[in-house]
Length: 379
Ligand SMILES: NC(=O)c1ccc[n+]([C@@H]2O[C@H](COP(=O)([O-])OP(=O)(O)OC[C@H]3O[C@@H](n4cnc5c(N)ncnc54)[C@H](O)[C@@H]3O)[C@@H](O)[C@H]2O)c1
Image (tube, rainbow, N blue to C red; front, side, top):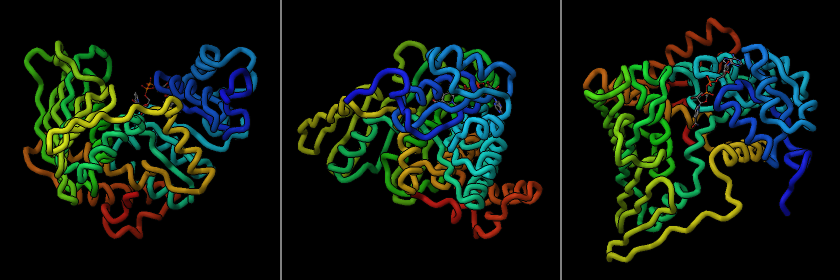
């Protein structure tokens, strides 16, 4: 039965504090408000008044008094009786906000990327081990029922071995994206790199990337890239993307083609995928169930279910670090003009993460990792 009205949404759910009340933080506040699994106990943002402003804008008047606000995440969480934190701060703040929350006893659902650097991401995997608290990264685009259907269709055709993504858009963001050295790879392609990991078996092994900035680009950094990711299963994901290609734009998810031993799966990123069998027969993908959860809603439900059931969700930090490793390897490959092994990236990051943790003093978990790759388990 549909639940409506004040208090019905997640009334008995997990009390959470949303930390970071910017654009995405507001999306998370709305997600928590309509969740049956979680309840909005508080909002925190370092900018004085930002949390209260977001609550005034988004929370129905009758429910606002039950939502604590402030500038200090842990103070708000304690005062609100929260049992988990959703970290939607800027990437540069993820490490501090999440580590502090884990050590204060709160499990964390963090926006992507896991942290500003792979070294910080590995450090957070260590903090999760040291504290025994769950740290799950929300990679919203992997929580897309069409993507899951594409994976199911590929499974029926013997499994995807060649996955190709074409991404073509022309957004005028202004701001930091237009000033970054690698806006497409770091800020956008991370979604496709992560989604491809839902479609293919194995662990990513190496990355070869070329990036460039078209003559007409309005970005300072490279707005176009071609990236090839090889997996230890033999599968390969190729990504061709541009953020300055007006005209025939793809969906925000990009267009996907999955080549399998017995046919091909095609997905436009928006509608149900379809398959073409080796005998030429077309197979329509199933439409998602009417009550299927999408993106942030699905991610939050998975986080709450994992806490309820004591299970390890997809995108738990140890598994998610591979997506961040692909991004760093792609940037290095584009800069150095060579194929980059993820083992190299992971080992360097482990050394840097250990230094970070030694000076911080709260976690020695990474000291027992033999290599960067060995520590990052794949769920
Ligand atoms: N999944 C997606 O599709 C998607 C889309 C956009 C952004 N994001 C991610 O969401 C996160 C936030 O992005 P955004 O666009 O909302 O950024 P934003 O700059 O609009 O908002 C970030 C907010 O965090 C606050 N903040 C910074 N440090 C803090 C701290 N230590 N404690 C509390 N608050 C702090 C800032 O004051 C700001 O209000 C980023 O990690 C970004 O990559 C994900």
